[in-house]
Length: 136
Image (cartoon, rainbow, N blue to C red; front, top):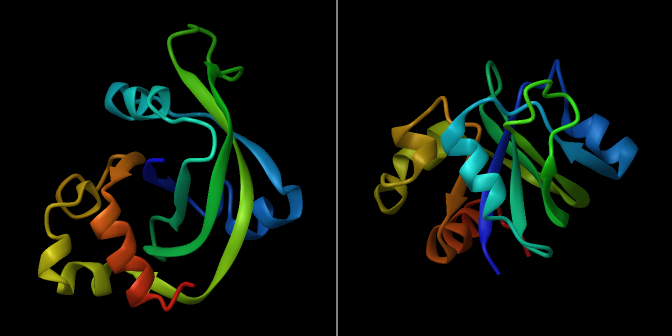
């Protein structure tokens, strides 16, 4: 199993939208590095759901239920999408500020490549972020 972080602008697709739909296509990604990350996702991989822009915080967890396919919103057919399912809401949201305070997380793309919308999270960092957020 691998671990990921998916960023979304809450005014475009929010955690509340994800909860209501339960299952959604993660589409609209137009960055080649993010596309490669989507292509490396496998069924049952876990992903933090991150509200970007003004909020900058992890608000939930989703799991991958369908591996990459051509993104139906991409007319060029160069980009891919995956399907994800809501797993859990976080009682304690984990802010970017909290993550940046933790030196053991300074290597994460979330800290180093702030504009990347789909990024891997190593198991040790996943566990540490879960501990910060008191996620069981």
